[in-house]
Image (cartoon, rainbow, N blue to C red; front, top):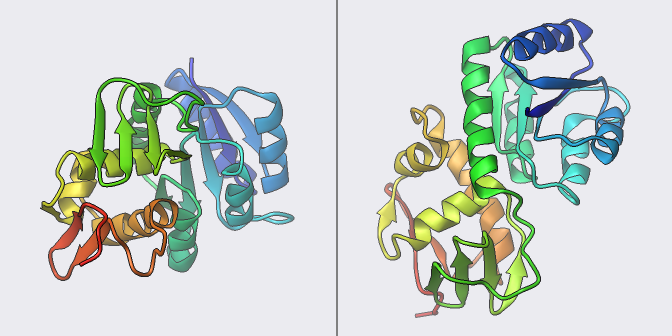
Length: 237
């Protein structure tokens, strides 16, 4: 049984989500501030977090930033329409997805299932101590192991979230090819590419911060203006 942590300062929303998710077979845990969410994560086995952005004491962005220092589980942000800037910021510090209030429970459930499916398949992305094993892909100084779910740059492990790993794997399986944001979104999120460009751009930026020596002058993930992104071999012209 999957355990889902619902964190929102609006108790009616938490109660409604608890009823809906429980009816779908999920075990739920409730928090009303970012601090409460972090406390629960430290004592309970949680597989996915639904995290509101605007909360007292500690907002969702700060809680997410602290959460990502330790945990690689999927996080879906719950946001109001007026919080576009916060949504982008949340994606940049490690959220895997977001959904805008008021949301359709069926859509939320689909997003939860999608994230849990990837999390179950790929597991945690803190790289193991050993060297990567079989089923490796290497591009330049980057090595990705689809067996151990580890990424290495110049032999050093790189810790990625599940979504970042999937994006990088898609690029490394298609080196030199221009991949559009819509194609990336369809492949990684396995959903219709609504809002694909902003979501993908934020994850690409975050991925660059982890695999590029100078994210402002990337060696690997290059922009092809008006078309998308291309993974190159890591060499300078």
